[in-house]
Image 1: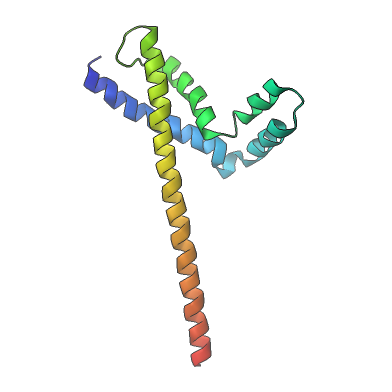
Image 2: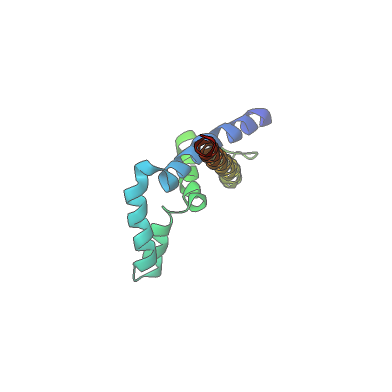
Amino acid sequence: MAIADQIIWLFVLAVPTACISWTVTHEEIFREPHEWCVKHSKNEKFLLTRKFFYLFTCEYCFSHYVTIGFLIFTDYKLLLNDWRGYILAGFSLVFVANIYMSLFALLRQAIKKEKVEIEKIEIETDNEKLINK
């Protein structure tokens, strides 16, 4: 595969990796399993068991496993055509996917801030209308 194609694959494969990792660890549809994993990651007796459950609560950690799944599914390698290509592809995918998730988190935070500011302005406007009547 040409280097340009490999780079395109890198940035494209990072999208579903980020999407799956974010959805499983943050979105409402997986809230109950997420809370269950959080509880077990804090309360389990054995270290390995706690770490296993933590895996499903951290988008960064979980993205490594999603990446492994995509590498197996797509047989994607980066730069080298042997096992080293898998290693490079894996860490590169995790890196790009986490950049996507960070940007998404910042975007969501900015949107929430805008909504709060709009609500505050609306309340102030409503209060001023009541006072002026």
